[in-house]
Image 1 (cartoon, one colour):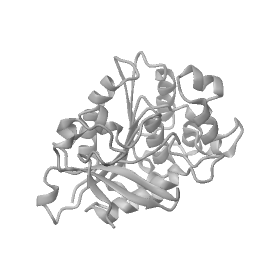
Image 2: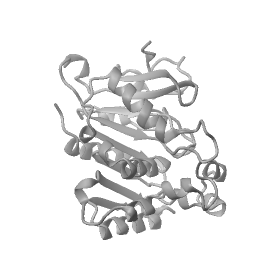
Image 3: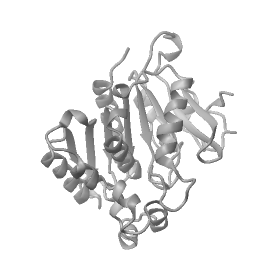
Length: 287
């Protein structure tokens, strides 16, 4: 069963309160399906291009848009004008559920496999339901905070699956946080420990962005997706982002990094998602 319903329907539990502009748009859908990984029904939200219904032979690239910690699959449509911002772009936007799982297969909870869930369930399900260009060269991934970490991690671990990875205010040090760090940055120490395990765990080593970059051979920028990063100058995460961008430069990995006046909030992300959409137009091909 398709399990597809409009976000406008108040009966969709995960949709929450949706702004009027989103509720009125028939381009916005929620897909619910039974996840083998979680053994439960999960949902993701989709923004279709304006002309999707009237161009039945056209296939589209896809941009996966990840939420932050304490948010859910519906938060982008609840907190921003992302539907309107996407209207002028010819790609499909997919907003999956990431829980508080850091888009990572948990070190301690066997069923919390958010990395595998995204790659092995969401991507194939989107390809089955929508007219997508199925190859990785037409797929991008972006996110804020926890989702910024997730987008970079997915791209570095699975470079053939994405052509673009974009991070807004990304928690790039996530796999290195101690309980004290998590408290200092107003992150949930429980989610860090639950996901990554103790400081010396294999899960931390396998999902550390800095270690992933250092493990790659230098001087081979074409083997990576294009990386975009930004962070507010008053954000506590800006130093870690600067350090990560410096490492990308050292390893000759093609990227851009922008420091934007602002803090860790929706005002900044509302503006930067428009920049990322424009970049996706440039980096993701159409057919």
